[in-house]
Image 1 (cartoon, rainbow, N blue to C red):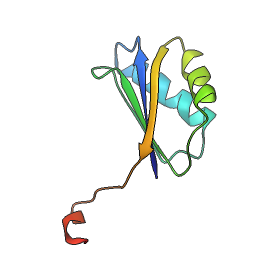
Image 2 (image 1 turned 180 degrees about the vertical axis):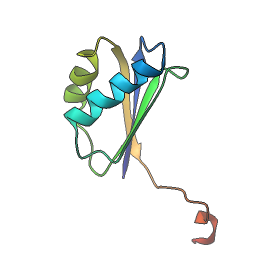
Image 3 (image 1 turned 90 degrees about the horizontal axis):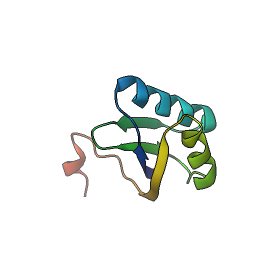
Image 4 (image 1 turned 30 degrees about the horizontal axis):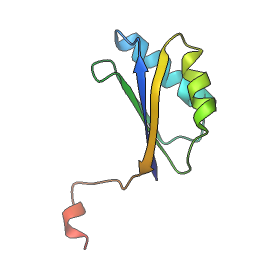
Length: 86
């Protein structure tokens, strides 16, 4: 699993977050989870494969918000009982 964090400027409310989330889902229907935060000015995306950064930037910029940065890293889901796995 890959976690992609996108710094997004211009989100001011919950509707802004929804617009960004919807744009990501339309551009990448294979993503597992998308969550935006106006307070943190970021969108977090979980996917099985790395996402095309330019396509991601284009999809979000087309909504009227500005992408300030994109970073990706491997992600391991942490469940409630994850401490039992060793």
